[in-house]
Image (cartoon, rainbow, N blue to C red; front, side):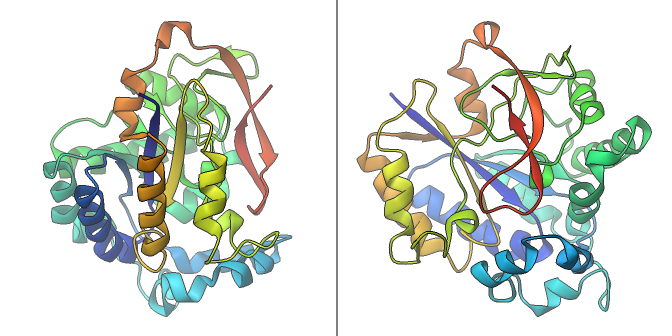
Length: 299
């Protein structure tokens, strides 16, 4: 049966508190599995204001109604308002996701800090940030994490190597077309990458004639013919878990009608012959609809 893995990135305190429970409910109603990747430290979303000077940032903000989806309070966290500690304030919600039968993993400790700085940081900084997330995850769940999905698809060689040293089952830190064994500067990283293979809703919205009315149909056209290794779709607790949930339900219905089994990332990995995965480099490249460069499967 062809598979589509649902990868849920949870970036903010509001997304954790409001979006996550709603997503658990809708997934259960559709008998769908998914993997939730949590931000586990302070919500410093307000510090993203520095991105206003990046080319394309204001255009994306206007296309995706950032204030509507994130709320004024979230956009002030870490600046005019103190940053809530997501892992400490929402630990019961996080454990509840696991207890409901969903796979959980690490997104990051501090989303803004990782997304804005990791690409140009060295080994010590990168390892320290990842270790903070690992320690908080272990504190909340009582065991070690086995999966990581980098915030904003921002990654460096040191982070990839540390995932291997930690014994992670896989990472989903990249964009691409199919699962692979990553290489960074010709250095093989023995930790499979399960890249996001489909565009996200915020990358598509209000571009090339795509609107709320036809965006689900556009995505379903992309999945009409499944590649041999299926698809990985990334959604966000702040978007599909709130204002865009009706679109997500259209996608769930459409994917099931197309014959997909909606699975977690772990289930998706279990369906692969990991020993036969091809090796691919990872490059920082632009992706349509995103600001800046992302870690992308090469070649």
